[in-house]
Length: 213
Image (cartoon, rainbow, N blue to C red; front, side):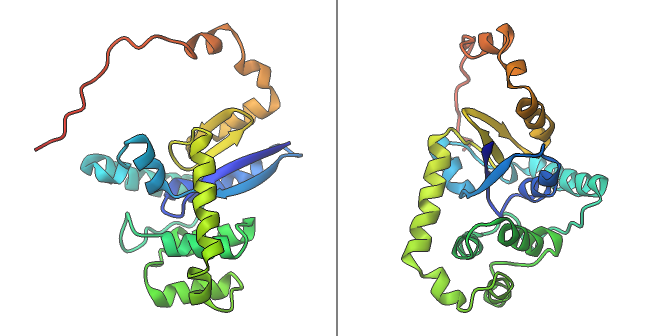
């Protein structure tokens, strides 16, 4: 069975989620889908967790704690959020395969390196097997591919990263991994009366969206 995984290098949860991937049931083929989180947020009119002060602090503490619980090396980069467009393009230029994505994530959250630094980008390009970082970053086909994979994810309803797409179902966040595994083992368990009822659950109240002055 083939499923998809939408990711952005800006997400520490995607880094942790990638470390869970070997625990997927056998026979599952995962296609990795580079997805620009900022474009997704803009499409849905959302703000990111790091744009809310108290949530930002909690999120960073939580991912450090989670990484320690998982026994995964983890170090936040020098700044966050950061512009990871160039690093994402290098991953796409390298083929967006599992090893390339792991290499890039390990740069960002395993080693805490600054992939907005041109020297670090050169190091990343070499680690990805790219002979010419500048050429890869300016390749029109690479840019177009990243736009297309992001749009593909949006069209399938992706609203955050990481997200697994299994058929028509979305499993958002590193902490939805066990739910995904249960679904892959028994999809019918997610098609009972209550699961179907919530698909058309009426909205009871709509919150006014007020922009702070």
